[in-house]
Structures are given as structure tokens and as C-alpha cells.
Length: 411
Ligand SMILES: Nc1ncnc2c1ncn2[C@@H]1O[C@H](COP(=O)(O)OP(=O)(O)OP(=O)(O)O)[C@@H](O)[C@H]1O
Ligand SMILES: [Mg+2]
Image 1 (cartoon, rainbow, N blue to C red):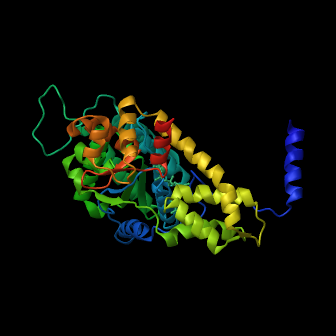
Image 2 (cartoon, rainbow, N blue to C red; image 1 turned 180 degrees about the horizontal axis):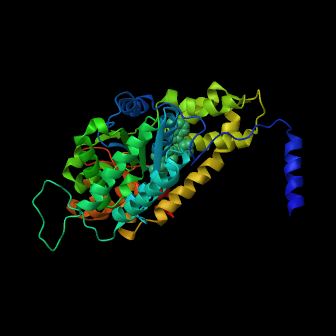
Image 3 (cartoon, rainbow, N blue to C red; image 1 turned 135 degrees about the vertical axis):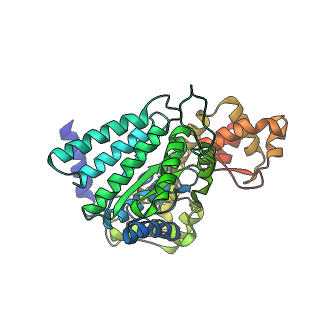
């Protein structure tokens, strides 16, 4: 087995001795992060406040967009830049399976240890103990949190769980100060997939940040997050002042940035794109970063270029079936995860043949009253399969999904 693997590898290398390796990253953080200058500047402005004044970098910052538009990539890029500025950064990929806040505290601990910020000896031991006890405190099951600290006191049998807020607040303050004392810029918290956090966790986070803002100049930290388009609504539901977070939506990439997604990684391998090939991929991907990476990758595999080569339109066409197959697999997975009612909703949408579909059109297609379609609509938005585009209109988030559903319905 090992021999045959080795010989296959050897054959491949010898038959194109200088073939460059595929630099595209569909589904992974990109090698070259293209565009998003405005969004990055907004994050950097926040970081600059922490660096320059040693103060809180503004309210919670929330990037929201459907799947595949580059939220995680943006956060990872921000993290790299923050690290270069001397921040200690803690990353949490939120998930419905785990409470978010204990994860956050664990991630802070790892970040502090990696940056060698924790004191040595007994003091370090005390820090570790404290981090452990806060992990427990913020994760206590059933610790129902009062959404608004300022609202009327709850009945005695329902104690207001201020403890997790207080514990987290004190921890964030102390760790951010510690980082600063050790010569760092401050603390950066990055929370991805924030829409999956429970309302209680969101509420504790928002209340904590609000409290830290009360003594802004002594809290050198910033919190940048990302999630699906439901995130702003979920935060506002968790605590009404959640609406004062900074919400920034990510759109598809413009043509110039889309080209850069393709040319950037190739350039690093000494490979270029013909104008025709670039135009074709940009048109096919419609600014959707995942698709750009996917078609870039399939073109590369079809061409297997060496340093100095130029990718052609013929090679784009040769690679397209592989990219389309992958996209169809994603369509199938989304369809497979939908309930019967949601499928009927999706079929009704697809049947219109339009990009943006009204509530009335969907209701008509489903044979229901337009008020009776809210549930599947909300669930599909939450899953990131469709997204609202204003005035009650919705559209599919993944290119080609409408065609996929129409083909299914024809079968
Ligand atoms: N600015 C960019 N430059 C180059 N590639 C990018 C950029 N943004 C995203 N990508 C690519 O697009 C794909 C999707 O990006 P990413 O995973 O960051 O999206 P996402 O919004 O976090 O998606 P999800 O909601 O599924 O987590 C990845 O393959 C990534 O390499
Ligand atoms: Mg992501």
C-alpha cells in the first residue's frame, strides 16, 4: 500500500516535474484574502482605539451574511492583523451543541498561555484556578439570565443570574489589563457562528459588554463576531439593547475583488489567468467567494499548470463539470436537510423562476394563506438556505439552487 502510494506520487511528480500545487481553498480560509477593504477598516478602527487609548473598542461588532460569503475568512484576517498589532486573541466557533461562554473562557486561557502572558509560579496558578472557576460559573446549566439588568426585579424564586455577568466582566477586565501590563495591545474576542449561541449566552455577553463600556477607558478589549443574517434579530431578542451593536452585512464581492480572489493565489505560484478565462469565472461565480475558490480550484486541477503558465478559457470549461458536481452535492445536502413543509416552500419559490420571490407568490404556490408560511420561512432563513432581501422578498443563498429544485420537481 505504502509502495504503490509512493510510486503513484513519484509518477505524478516526474511527469510534471514543476507542476505547482493547487493554491485555491474552497471551504477553507483563503491563502490570499481579497477585497473587503471597508469591512477590514472598520475592524481596524476598533483595534486602533484599543491600541492608542487602551480603551474598549466600541460596542459588539457583528458581521452577518448567508453561508459562503466570507465571514470566517474576514474574522481570521482580522485576527492575523490584530496579532501583528500585539493583541492576544481568543476565537470561538459557537455551536448549538455546546454552551458558548465556557468555550470563550477556555479559549481565552489558551490564548493567554500561547502568548505567555500568564505569570509564572504561584500567581500563574491562581490565574488558572480562576479561569477554571469562571468557566464553571458562566456555564452553570439552568442559570436563567435576566435579559435586562435594568428591568424590574424578578420574583424571589427566580433568582436573577447576575453572577455569570459579574464573573465574565471581571475576567475580561482583568485579562485585558494583564495583556496590556505585559506590553500587549489588549484582548480581542472573535466569535464565529454567533447565531447558534443561546439567548442566555447572548444576553450575558451583551450585558457584560455594556457594563465594561461603563468604565470604557480601563478595558482594553474588542469583540468582533459573525453569523448568519438572523444574528441581529437574535441579539435584539436576547437583550433589547443588543440592537445598539454595530451590524455590518457582507455582500457578494465586486468584479475587481472577485478577479483578485483568482489571480492572487495563482500569482504566488507564478501562474497567470488569461482575460477570457477570468471573465468567464467571474461571470459564473457572480461574486460568490466560495464559488470563485471552487472554480479556481477546478480550473487549476484541469490545467495542472507549471510556473510561467497561463490558465485559459478552455481549461476553465474543462474544470467546470467538477465544480458543478460539488455545487450539486451542496444543493442535495440542503434539500436533504429540509422538512416536507420547507421543501414545499422551496419548490414554490423555485417554480416562480425569479431571483427574488414575494410572500404571496410562495403562499400561492404552496396553496396556503400568506400568513401561514412564516414558520418554514423563518427556519429556512435560520439555516441559511434563503435570505430576506427587503420588502418581504426572499431569495436562495446558493447559486443554482432554484435550477436544482426545478429539476427535482420535473423528475
Ligand atoms: N475575501 C476573500 N478572498 C478570497 N477568498 C475568500 C474571501 N472570502 C471568502 N473566501 C473563500 O470563500 C469560501 C467561504 O468563505 P468563509 O468560509 O469565510 O465563508 P462564511 O461566510 O464563513 O461561510 P459559512 O457561513 O458557511 O461559515 C472559502 O473557501 C474562502 O476561501
Ligand atoms: Mg464561516
